[in-house]
Length: 104
Length: 172
Image (cartoon, rainbow over all chains, first blue to last red; front, side):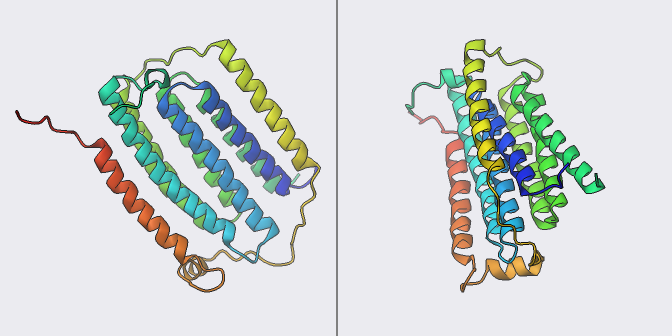
């Protein structure tokens, strides 16, 4: 068996990205859609860190991108959950099929 | 096989297994718990790559923040224990095919690509280096995105309050 290289890590992050994408395609509940998006963002973070560590170890750009992606993901989750709870108050459901109109 | 490789495979199996469970289980609360263990596994992968700072940020922000937020919103919108409706096979099958094809395509690209590894230089991820670079205006400095993200967080905070605020009925 070959030693662990960047290819193994990239294969792991690719699998995780497409697992998240499968969840995004099949789920019909807004909270689970948000969870699938979090999985995809995490796999992208793994890619940034792996490229930074193995290909350009003298720089830190990938690490900074990871930190910023984590920050923006936190902000995005907070706003999305505020929207979901507001939608639940007005529609009594958070299924995407029931959220057809975008009226106030 | 070295112990380091065995640990990598254990972490990979843990992450992928709990990721698959997170997108396929029908109880939404269990799905959130599987997501939690996926995120912990990713933090373990960062520890495996000797990136302690990123692993700590991952645990603090994701496990301590986002998953707790998701669990609270599940409690606010669902009865605990009820199952989500079954997904029709005619929706599951095309999604699985599309995802498997895309994964095979990307994995094929990855396996036939050779990366120009630079093993000579050492990777220095000390916290004081991160802090210095984060607030440097010169070459390789990240102060502009830092300030932009701080504005974004402020805007997200105000936006959350405005969206989730209860609108009082106008008194007639």
